[in-house]
Image 1 (tube, one colour):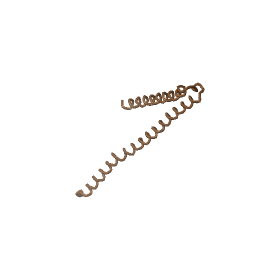
Image 2: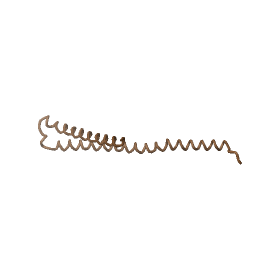
Image 3: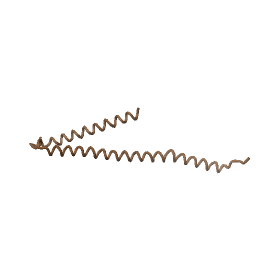
Image 4: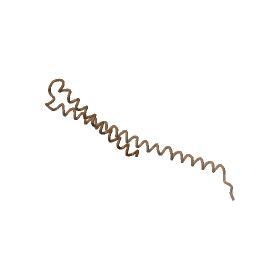
Length: 105
């Protein structure tokens, strides 16, 4: 019966520890990086969408002849565009909070 070599046993333990550390740290970080990248891309696209909706609303209202009057009438399209942006941001917030509650429950 051969006696186990302590050096080989130590090397095996070292390999197992390194493999375990890689499995528990590097792999989750890779997945986290992917989700983070997708989240940042989604946030940028969402910002651009809301920005263009607000800009389109403003340009549409400015092109209408109904708002060609005094200083108050020329300011009204800006106020309406801001209101549209606030509503859009509120809808996005509600959607995200519902999704968060669904994930947490």
